[in-house]
Figure 1: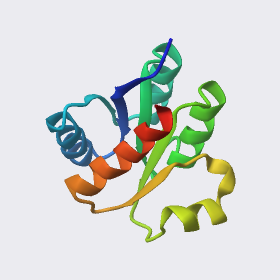
Figure 2 (figure 1 turned 90 degrees about the vertical axis):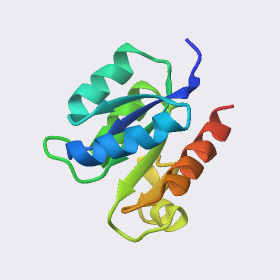
Figure 3 (figure 1 turned 60 degrees about the vertical axis):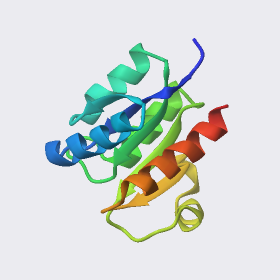
Length: 128
């Protein structure tokens, strides 16, 4: 099944942040599946292959963002990933320090709607 650029997954264990992030994306025309549980997000990616971009927090209980990305990339190597973090690292620095994570974009929390949309659009351009 081909990837659908307008379908995204957002994973954040904090319900309020998940709501704000998914709302921002929905207002910009994306169909968004939101999860507070990274295991449920992984199950969704395995079962439904249409999502093209996963946006995930780094720090989460049970499974952190790195583990989630690794598992998702094993199942779907073509999926693009945006990690949200309170660490102040740029994407280039992230790739140098952790090249095996398969992260395409990094967003520093807190971020603006325009920063979020820009990161998603960059990922979608890699899919197309």
